[in-house]
Length: 213
Image (cartoon, rainbow, N blue to C red; front, side, top):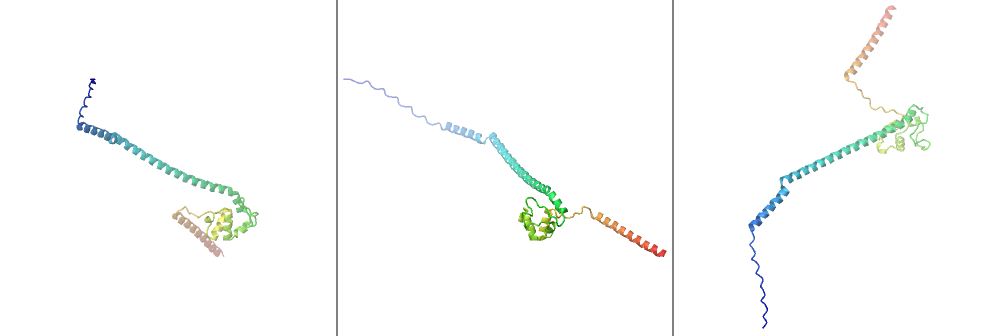
């Protein structure tokens, strides 16, 4: 009878070792401390704070630069407006000089391209402009390029605006006395003394004539 050789049985696995809870807890504590130090450590906190301060300073600098640019843009706009007004005055000087010295029956000059020959409603002579009504003055101002909102509502002011623009009226503005009251009083006193002296001389002259007679 054939007997098979006996099979060698595998040794039983070793029994699992009980977990070392103490070592595991210590590892967790160490990892937690490392993470806490990494995220909330003194060096990292200072660097984050410094970075935040740098960003705030950068934002403040950008805001100040933006305000400077706005002020600069406003200054350029005012300069451009002043340049346009100066250029307009220079271009209008020959025209205004001619109109100011022209006779009342002499045809006045208008800025290009406005000419009385092209626009029949424009006054032709200096006399016609000086007698223009407020309504017609407004119409002429609009045709000369003035915006209706910039034209005064008063008829005389419209007329003055038109005459000043064409050089027929000199806009000297309000008179400003730059002296003081004491100087004005002294000037009045000197004038009074001169008048009294002239009057006294006149009286003495009449008395002398009477005595001679």
